[in-house]
Image (cartoon, rainbow, N blue to C red; front, side, top):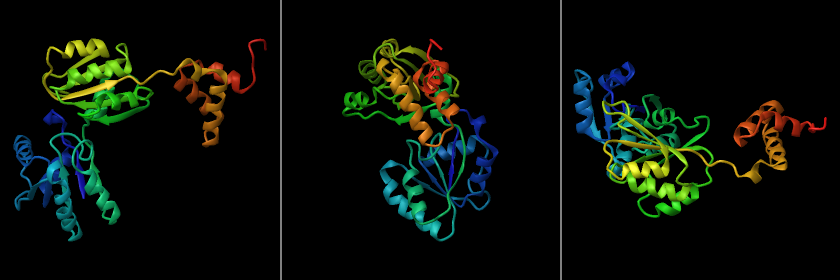
Length: 278
């Protein structure tokens, strides 16, 4: 089986390997068959080449049933090419269940990498990129509680959101994380009207109240460590834990200093018993 990343907006981002795969495919599972055919037409690609490909829909509502059908194709030795409307299959789109099923049955799976709204929004946000997590679409029900559980998350967080809900979600984030928590709203990435708005969550919620259009990604700064988490004992314990995991002391000191937002020299001196009097 092959998972194929599709451009998130700009057709020129389609790699040659993707176009060849679409032409060579015998079976294509597409999130939206109509949109796939539109993409192929714009890219001047004939799905399945001269022989043509069997194109089937593969989306949330039929994913369970269709997974069994696609597994049967794979067991019979036919490769299945899985594509979504945009981005990588399995990332907030169908694909995960089929990959899991293939893993259980030892069916080989490969991928044709492509653009991702997750990493594109992350690098454009201006927020830390060294540690991040993808949170997908926030839940429609229990949003406040869901965000409250993430309030102490220290990694930069990336969310997807629909345009008609983005204002309410930003308001809820400002309530849960604080109005001054830095964030970025990225819309229409790689497209003609691409826009990145940066600021505090409260400020962005006010901006979004006027209405936002297009495909939306929200990137939110991680929580900063509380003062008690950067006291001497906590820093020493953190270094010791990393060393216990196999990191060299120098690397552990560097990582703890960066993660805690304290000078590396301070952590070094603590570990080696150096005091200001020395």
